[in-house]
Length: 522
Ligand code: ZN
Image (cartoon, rainbow, N blue to C red; front, side):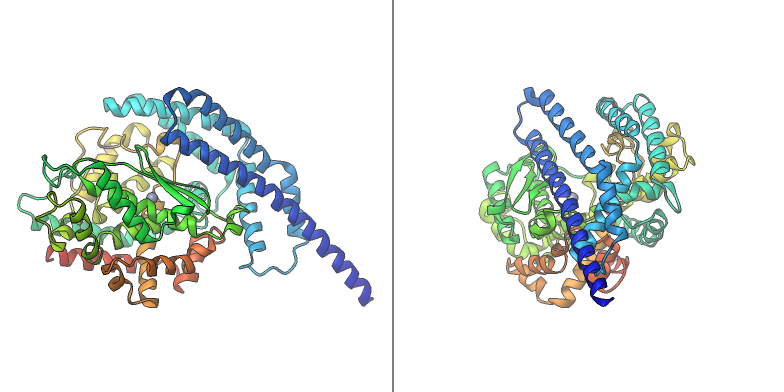
């Protein structure tokens, strides 16, 4: 009896292993196709001549179609089903358990969306983007409105196909931030809102005449000129100090800075150089460098089987941590101001660490999210989150959106956009069908402070090291505590593992209040 049981068990383990290998093999192929898609897209945004556009679009569409077919192949579903019904005891932290969790999540999501919906969504969003570009140029919301209505209708359909327990928004959010619900976002954001709006008001009351509503794009004056080569050199020095591995990555230029990874051994970042303001390229480099350290830090054995992608919020926590908490700190400038002055001696001769620290932390409510400072940034996200939630739940009609946008801007930031281009039409996301994406930016900010607090508790010398230009102690902590897990865990599980607590807003609120109270003498 015993021997027989043993033999049966051996046979079923061998059977399970065989199926597991087969599934892993399939996923590896999808990962490889995805990496090829990444190369095409990176090239398109960096070096491709305009004449390549048509053929590139066709190549990208062909690859996307093959990837979708491979993932949603019914045999993948059979394998997942077999593996889950004959599941051996797997530790939830094991690679095998994580692999099955993540593949099942992706498979379930993709097979629930009918091909008709996928095609229609791709068609409408590609048309909508073209219309949006023109509508933004002409600041004409009415020409974009019918497309936005269609995109939100498609999003509602998607939520119904995908299914949800509480609210349709949850089904969309799950693509970007699995395991988080709209109701949780509302609770976290409700903790931030009163503190941030009060800070903005208090800072404004300290400024004679209130705060200007546009970012100053020439903070060094109209005559200042920061040569391209020196700006590039400064960025490369900072990346080297951060531990960006140039044997496993490179930096190039693009109109909108971004990070893409073809594997942990080949991570690409881009920047954009503004001649009159060296801070623009510097901070985009530090931001994308933060994303890149994550990508380079993911174990290749996880990346290879599709466990290389953390949630968007976790990814953004890394870029925000480096850009804001590190890059906009006094300690950072103690080391990097002399470096910058060596490269731009005339332009920066009058600066001290203190004056640079104040310059890079200026608070001013602005119409444009991407120009926002740390204090006002999340308020821009709340405007978008609340409006897309209301649109999805049909508490707001698309025709009412510009007015609702302006009202919320007044409520949170105290300013009213003069036109739709600087208001409701400013972001590309909705035109691309990315509904439920914006909150991940705010989650990134919240998480960046919670992770940093933990880093300081474990390695208290990090700020002193930053002041000496040593950025590696922080990078190594992030590698060992966060990057090493790749995409094995949802953000809520990861934050618990790293900090011993669920996601909490208190470290972020403490950081932002302490920093800006001191800066503005509140
Ligand atoms: Zn980012």
